Amino acid sequence: MLYDMPGLDDEQFKNEFKNLTWLRHQNIVRLVGYCYDIQEIQVMHEGRLILAERTHRALCLEYMSKGSLENYLSDECDRYDWHTGYGIINGICKGLKYLHNELEPPIYHLDLKPANVLLDENMVPRIADFGMSRLFTDEQTRATRSSLGTFGYLPPEYIHNNLISNKFDIFSLGVVIIKIMAGRAGYFNSAEMPSREFTDLVQEKWTTKLLETFNLRKAYSAQVRICIKIALSCVQEDRHKRPTIQDIVDRLNNTVAKCTDAARMDWFLIYQDSLGHLTQPGNISNLHCEQETPSKNNPSPSYDMEADKNIFPRYAQDPIDKHVNHIYHGSTFNQ
Image 1 (cartoon, rainbow, N blue to C red):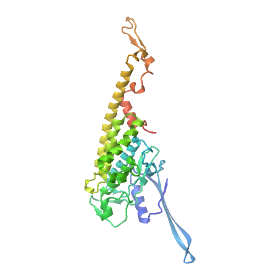
Image 2: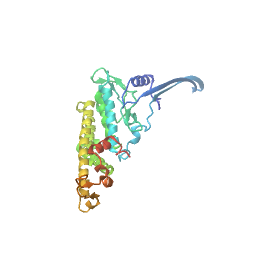
Image 3: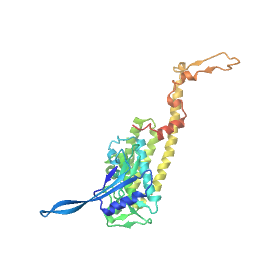
Image 4: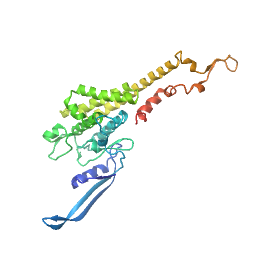
């Protein structure tokens, strides 16, 4: 995929290329090659033709068939299911954790937004566009006179005092998560409503969608609520109150464990309900049980399970954990 970069100067282009050449993570876009071409052209200047140089800069990145996350944002949250949305949130956070915590020195992206998150054929996110990013040898806050980022994703301390720290990216991340969960207008609603009211609103929207998609509302509704709380904590005005990326990833990992346990319980209840339905007086006659006279070769009555295997629902035939794994790691939620 050729990523044209006409708006960058030479320094920004070289910075983007240098950063991408040594980044290796499943949630960071991979550099394949680059183009840097200078052409001489004739242009009119004060009524006469003169020679000028035109520089063409482009990076060749791995092909992302789904384009950018920006294309999938919707106020109705109807472009993807919760399983996909959570996977995108989790992937972005893991990519940011790699930049902040797993590199020496760390990299601050400084322009994290939906347009800079690319999606592969499986909707796995890759953070891209490192032209604005900077290397920091310590955790200190820096002041800069340079113009960075995109309006709407800039933290207050940068807007007012040009301060840069690892909490710059955390603020941008919060805005991105809110837009994934509440749509394009979500961030503005979050600023106008009390945190609890906004959290309830987003949770109700996704809970309704979860119920329509699959009957595991309780299991994933709690995960929705935790994710929106994480997002709101990221966009706090005081940067010192924002969580670190490690805190965020730890909380997300914890939701996976809790969600799997809750899903397992939901399947157990469904399993019990199905068996209870089959053993009701009106249904028991459908079971092909045959009473036989005990004999030496057949000392007890037999039950023809082969004849009845199609009567039981699919979830009553397999272990509960199999269904939980299929739902959470498989494609049940994919539309």
